[in-house]
Amino acid sequence: MSDELLILGVRLAGGFHFVTLVLACFTPIPPDWEKNLAALPPMHRRFALAQNFSIGATIVVLGLLSLLFAPTLVAGTPLARAVCGATALFWGGRALILPWLGVRATLTNPWLRAGYRLLIAECVIYAAAYGWLAVRPV
Image 1: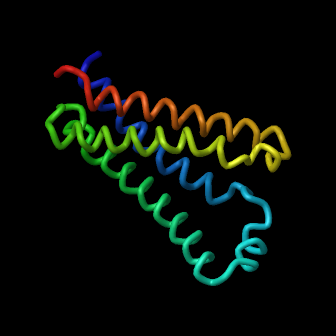
Image 2: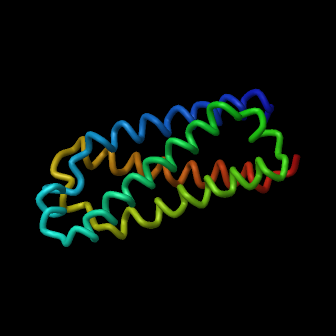
């Protein structure tokens, strides 16, 4: 595969990081989020909010790195391999965690069910693609 095609793929993935983040902001999972958070002690509520912010910030950083530094990530320098490996670990972890969360019961319409399947597929594809960039021979 040519470097130009790989660079385009990394940039597209970078853009889709932002699409994923925007869609996550409009996805009603879990239902009654505010009501459920209000029932928690303030410290637990802050932990939940901080975790969501951290996940969102990570997606933004990985998206920006993919958009702005795609040629560098494809070049295979040690730092590029580390960034690609970390990106693969993040998305691979998400692919494992999402089913464990047990959200299927809240997927009340076909759009939510399709979106959830696409999210899992995206996580697996990113984990595989960035993982391959981390270990491929250059």
